[in-house]
Image 1 (cartoon, protein in one colour):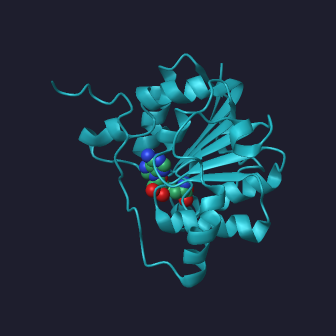
Image 2 (cartoon, protein in one colour):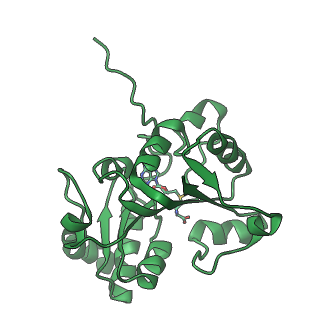
Amino acid sequence: MTAAPDPLSIRRLYGRAQGHPLRANAQKLIDELLPRLAVPEEGPLSAETLFGDARPLAFEVGFGKGEHLGFQAALRPDWGFIGAEPYLNGVAGLLAEVEERGLSNVRVHRGDALDVLERLPDASLSTLYLLHPDPWPKARHTKRRFVNAGPLKLVAAKLKPGGEFRVATDHVGYMRHTLAVMQSQPQFEWTAETPDDWERIPADWPDTRFAEKARALGHDVWRLIYRRA
Ligand SMILES: C[S@@+](CC[C@H](N)C(=O)[O-])C[C@H]1O[C@@H](n2cnc3c(N)ncnc32)[C@H](O)[C@@H]1O
């Protein structure tokens, strides 16, 4: 018997799981700090199990080097932030942010975001960030994008009513894909009301490394905020 196809069709990596060898201080963070902040590998998760109380939760999918997650966690010290990223050098980057900013409200999963997302209680997230997701630019690969029915069903289930799903991309194909796919998702409403909203940069949304690179090349960066209906 063949296994049923995985409805969460993004469980394949576009990029690398590791880049250059880690420097000594980054390796130390992986060896010593990561075990203290790692999301447990199994079992149900909640604000209580992760942070010891019923605080609001936010989640970042594919946090890269962690600069955005570090910023958000410093901005809202009474929230709990969960980040998932398979790229080891990126995880070390987030751990450096945690250490430098003295954060105590961050938990980290080195791996697929969906493996953590599916273990959270329904209606438990206040915000979910998806910033410059892997573009999977070839037409035959678009089903591997995070913005697709399977992952979005999970995002809709895990966000609280009124919770925000924030998406950024510098890939015009991904932007158009997101607008089209999200339009067919009645659980989400796009918050932009005027062209100005589309271009306005919210103060609590700093550029990520990928956004900076895109702007340096003269590319546009699109930011979309959807609200869970
Ligand atoms: C283009 S990079 C953007 C990184 C960062 N968000 C930024 O804006 O600088 C996309 C990131 O998503 C991560 N990623 C890919 N698939 C993932 C998955 N299933 N779960 C979590 N992260 C994933 C990649 O490892 C990569 O670091």
